[in-house]
Length: 382
Figure 1 (cartoon, rainbow, N blue to C red):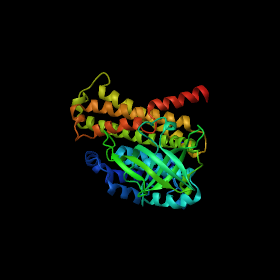
Figure 2 (figure 1 turned 45 degrees about the horizontal axis):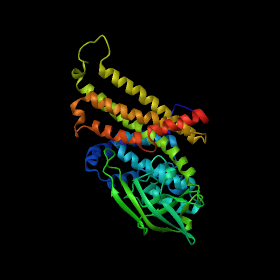
Figure 3 (figure 1 turned 90 degrees about the vertical axis):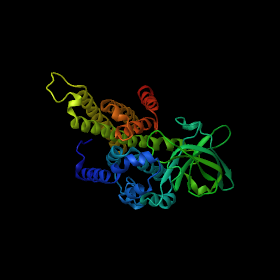
Figure 4 (figure 1 turned 90 degrees about the horizontal axis):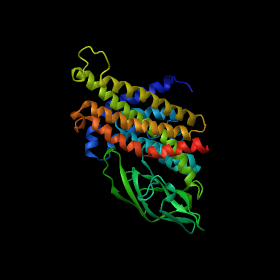
């Protein structure tokens, strides 16, 4: 693994940082307070090619590697973690599932539309009674002639109400052997309904909704992958998604650090930096520790991305990156809000937005406790 990102990746990083500073950061506070999906930003993301980052060019994507995706997502996480989640889930969950496990006809039919931003993608796995334990979902798919009929409900589906293409998981099989199968469906299909749109504490400009499936009829060609084989497929997609989520969390921590540095520089007297001191101040210790931990989390994330790009086993490293970066995002935003003081809790301060966003990144795509479970299994049984 090389630490030099190379001129192409550095140019991409610079381009996305400038795009974020011009198009996303100025509206981030407003979009958060509104709590509605910013379609205008989604269109700009599409024009930048950010809705097909790792998809091959033959399907309309940029054809970049996962390490490049991580660079993009860190910049987006620094700017607005809600926008970053839209890009991450669209690329890493829905589009990636179809790319990894769909047949050629499905790839040709859906991936160019997803890459261009003609439609957004959603990945519907979570249910009211099945979060971390995906095997316990209740949504059922029953055979109906040559096709299938799906019934059930999904919750906390990112892009749930705004997507045009959905990958939906349901139980199939019989004889006491329930199995998971993935299906692809499009917006407007009879029996696919959008329920409650969630009002979340953070990432409020990201669309999150319930889905209701009532006699959703899908033909056999809408099965993604092998019938009964979707649990393994979903875990593969989630492992890759954890690398991407880790990059966003690094971006959130970086945003908090930059806000802390800006505040301390603007008002050094408030932090004991206007007079010589024999020791480190609280502000100096806090900023230095966060900066060091951001670099450590970024290196873990880039290692996992490099392993994934190299075709090597990466699940343990993905969980390590997700665990460390998710916990760091929460720690960094908490400490920076504390450092800023009462102003940090004001809705006019970006610090409180970073804090609220960080908690949901600590939970999403496998909580810290799930990552600890995965890592311990590798240590004890792997």
